Image 1 (cartoon, helix red, strand yellow):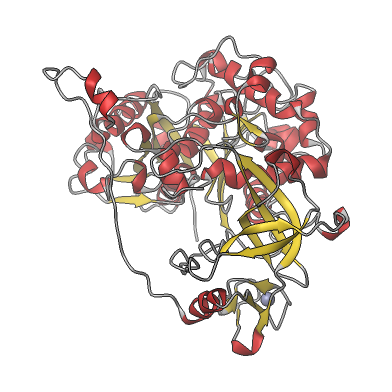
Image 2 (spheres, rainbow over the protein chains, first blue to last red):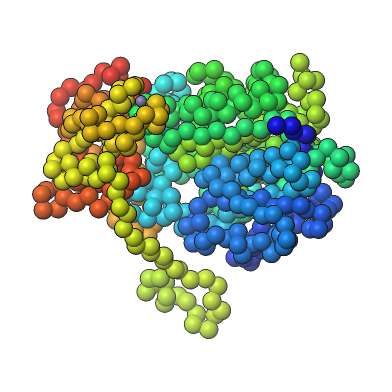
Length: 388
Length: 186
Ligand SMILES: [Zn+2]
């Protein structure tokens, strides 16, 4: 398959909040999409196709929302499609849009992801509405216990991630949670929801949307602001449950990471990636993914957290935006990682900008950590080569 | 909406939102191998299929091994032990979402059954939540004959066997060695 370069030339997101009762679902996506178009200095008529993503419909109780959103997204007469891969959907959606550009099917694609969780009840949705239901936290908690047991990580690692991401969020005006007074003590003292996950180690439930405009090389050269070039993409999946599954280090996650590194020409991710946005809805997932994607060796992920390496000023900043721990409109959360990585390499991340960020990794996972989507973006097409 | 909540509402205020619960009731026809699993549960037996190629045990049986991509049949059916080791757990503090009846913290455990097969999200009985730990040896507690049901079994079942199995209780034997279960992290 012949491919051509694709780039992000417009990014827009909403202020993520517990409840956006001032807008409808179409109004919410429209808000993010308009901001992405404004950023690219394009009009609705400049867009060739729309790719929309969100998590399960029961989160809002609105079935097939894409039908009623087509008009809000200026899709009349244009191709529109919806993607769904659970929590990773925002990432998968961005990749489908990217592939439409890379293959030359369309020149300018608008991609949007959202969730309006306040209109439903996420806990009900995640737990199936039955008594004794676990929710996502209950499914992941035992795996974190295994990570802790295997790696010998001290118990304060999860608290540290929670504090770091919330402090980063205070620098991001769009983040849902702004908790300037967060502290290790507060995280530790917060109620235990799913042992070992405390309340303050868990993501919030948010309303929010994010959008990007993707285009080809010719389009990127005409863009008013710096593009973020897509240097590699990857998607992988595995079964959610089978005997002998390694839930701490899902094979699909390892393979997805290696596929995206290879695509971008990355030999040493820890050295060659400047900034990473990883899907961390529960604090322990930061060290788990650092190891699960071979950024750190076995037992080294939590050491990167402990030494401060993943802080905004560290050698390997993770979730400078505040991450999923600070804003979680589930369907949008994956695309937010992709958009934030793009913002970083464009140098447009504002107060949470990482210095000299030229190569960014974004990752999203979904289901029982069974769907993975990743991309590597760069400030230039040869951003990785320059690091060799 | 509760009565208490309604009392606080100004009847002349514009309606900004309202609670609306959906319910979708349908019957799912179980595929034949899952039907056999459900029938066995009613008979106080746990069955699975052992893949003829890799030896992994699937319970409920799926009629195939998704890893080897080979079919499994009645010839591959085995009866599983109803005793095993707690390999992993979490203690859940219930959030009072609609439909949740629990009010106190409860444990959910993953089990490695003696001789092969595993079950996740099982209830642990007769043990205070603070004493739950990996390595515990446990045995099944079947629901009484009159209450046993398999309505919760679906073709997407993750092997919870709710309705047929009340939970698992300690056998009183010494804990298993971590070597026996540390790679079983489902
Ligand atoms: Zn097999």
